[in-house]
Image 1 (spheres, rainbow, N blue to C red):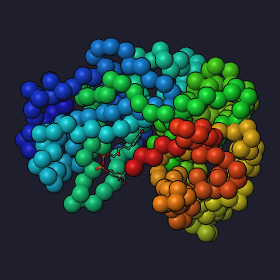
Image 2 (image 1 turned 90 degrees about the horizontal axis):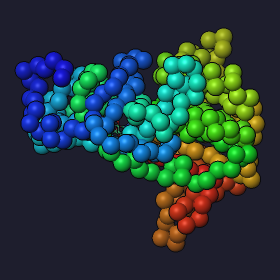
Image 3 (image 1 turned 90 degrees about the vertical axis):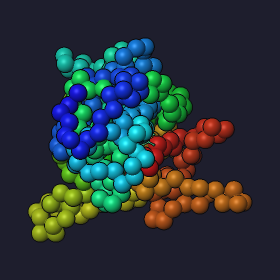
Image 4 (image 1 turned 180 degrees about the vertical axis):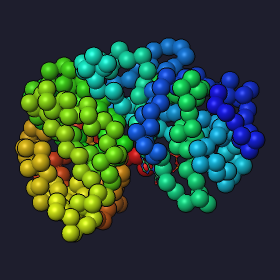
Length: 316
Ligand SMILES: Cc1cc2nc3c(=O)[nH]c(=O)nc-3n(C[C@H](O)[C@H](O)[C@H](O)COP(=O)(O)OP(=O)(O)OC[C@H]3O[C@@H](n4cnc5c(N)ncnc54)[C@H](O)[C@@H]3O)c2cc1C
């Protein structure tokens, strides 16, 4: 276990009961971004690409920010949150990994920033983990994000914000490995280029697969914020890039509802999922997210009783 401070109450008796997994490795591309590999003590972790599971740590575990929790109720509880299972994409030999054969689950986690009077509970504790540390991982994966069958000739557009790229890494790796023939584009919106932990792997996929494009979109680089910058492009959300058609230029093709599935993951504002009013009509959030724009273009929202071609996973 990691070094403790006097102010970090430790309950080894409780952690021994609750924890069922070990950190295989952890890497922080920068202070707010974490790649965590976790292995269950026993049993195979069965997970389809695109699914999520839970990670949990006791409220007694140390936080990187050393903030105390606001409520003492957390201190004796397991703090559990959902995380999409990502993929390393390439193995050490540079080959596409076979997702189902990995003997660890990879997670791509953002350190959440919240006011100090309401500090985030789990991520500051996940960021304090080191190789060999113990935690709880849900032994069963969940979710239907990528459950709808896709034909090898259909086109796939994945749109994520930040670590919302995680399930796309797993789905895309598997699709390319099994010979998907349709076009695949992964579009990821982040504040800064340094927030793209898998950039190198995606660039290698582009070199190898003619049908693959990776399009990172930043919102806080100098070219987004400073009009005097020679490459000034402004600060554009993915919705705007889609509405103006700029996204189609950047991915090199125009997604059509006749032959394309679209996957949206991460920030709920980017996704813009509707709710139903009393008469059963969709009510969309304002400003519009990707779902509303896609439905206007003839796409259909996926639903358990009416399979469609727009799929989404909201992170909060
Ligand atoms: C199905 C599912 C899969 C998820 N997969 C991932 C994942 O792969 N990677 C990941 O980083 N998070 C993921 N999340 C979010 C994750 O479950 C937690 O909400 C997040 O890590 C914050 O936990 P916390 O206890 O530190 O913060 P909390 O105290 O629980 O604060 C939650 C608040 O933090 C903000 N928030 C949550 N997630 C993010 C985020 N990723 N980026 C910025 N702000 C955020 C929101 O305002 C949210 O209301 C997923 C959520 C769901 C529902």
